[in-house]
Amino acid sequence: MVEALGTIVGMTQEKESEIIPILGSLLQAAGLVSRKEADASLASHVIHRLSGDGSSRRFFRVVRRSGEKLCLAVAPAGQTDQDLREAKAARMIGSHLYSHGVMVPAQYGWDEETGLLLFEDLGDMKLHDLVEANRSSRGVIDVQAVRPMYVQAVQELAVMQIRGAMNFDCDWCWDTREYDRPLMLSRESGYFLRAFWQELLGQPIIPGVEEDFEQIATMASEASTAFFLHRDFQSRNIMLRDGQVCFIDFQGGRMGPLGYDLASLLIDPYTALPVSLQEELLEIYLDAVHAQHPLDRRLFRRQYTSLAVQRNLQIIGAFSFLSRARGKDFFARFIAPALASLTRRLESEEFRDLRVLPGLALRAMELLRHEA
Image (cartoon, rainbow, N blue to C red; front, side, top):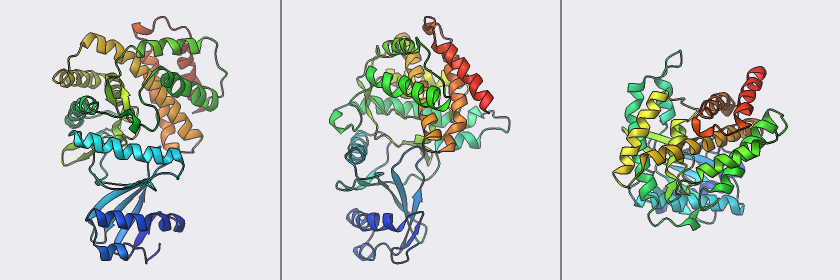
């Protein structure tokens, strides 16, 4: 805590010296603080370091001593070229979405040299928090209590996917320009195989499983990639404020298929929505898309199934890596629910020709139960 810089919570001296001067300049330029306050190194403010789930980026809340929230500041994890490209993607994609009426936070300031970006402060209530607040001690969700926000979320998702694709510049993307087959095989099924099956469970690769992954990727690749894809559209990236949803963490956006983001929300292991609610929300989403864009519902459902498996594989791989390699224990408890979701989905008729993966998933569930 350094009084000359105001009350700073959760920041080291090194990080303070890096962030504060730039933050003061951006706040002043946005009209959020006076020149006097900025020159005094924000002595009249409290700056809280916030956690960022699986992200390595750094998050700060700027608050006046009176309690008034001014904004959130997001800084890259470091100053590598990749870090700065990710920060710029958040700047450019967020500005693009906001200008097209998508429910994302406003931006108040941007420093291109350091990648520091100021966002509207949406508070602390996530869709995941709403679900947990309405879950009984037996784990049953009060569907009627959470349904209105989920309905709004899928309807606004359709808006984001269609409007966000308008004049979207793939040069803004810091990772890949679109969701494609190589990404599926490397970052999703390959991630599952490496981070979960080999590294977390310590199992050898079973011959034939990679051919199964190729088959699923072929099915998923049939979907058009003419839409904006958030790629991490789940309950902890949907904020709730004043009865409205607002989407965050969109810096990984790119062009992609419609069904992937919907699957990310509906099969989200953080919430484990009842299948009946998932099906209802899928129909509401299809109505919302169809109101803006012609849609073959039967074709969408077929593509959705394979995209949901791809997302399921990505979730398990990511949670395994974050819990094992980065020591983020929060994610470990969601691996088993995600794996259970995968095994159920692999029972679908579409995957009857898979030879190895269904059995591998069942074996993985046994291994997880044994470790627990």
